[in-house]
Length: 117
Image 1 (tube, one colour):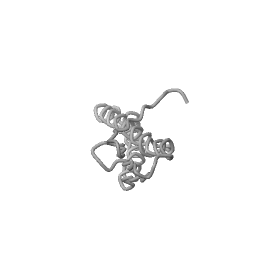
Image 2: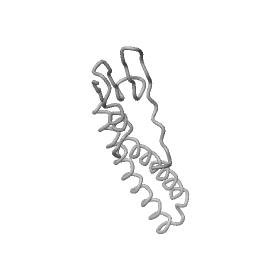
Image 3: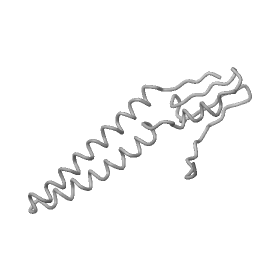
C-alpha cells in the first residue's frame, strides 16, 4: 500500500494550535490584569476574556487534531498496513481528509473518536 500524506499541512496546523494556545494565555492574562488593576476598564477586560476563551478553544481543537500522536492518519496507517500494493491511501491531499483508492473502488475513511480507550 502506498501512503501519501500532506506533511506540510500537518506540521503547519500543529504549530498553529501551539501558538494559538500560547497567545490565548497571554490574552487571558491581559484580561485578568486589566480586571484587577484598572476596574474602570471593565469592558476591555471582558472583551479580552471572551477573545482569550475563544482562542483557547481553537488552540485545543487544533492541538488535539493535529498536534497529538497518534493522529487519525497514523491510526489508519497502522490499521490498514496489510493491504496489497494496489491500494493508495491519501491523507489530507484531497478534498476529503482520508481517501483509500483500490482496484475495486474509492472509499472515504471517517475516523470516529470513541470515549472508551
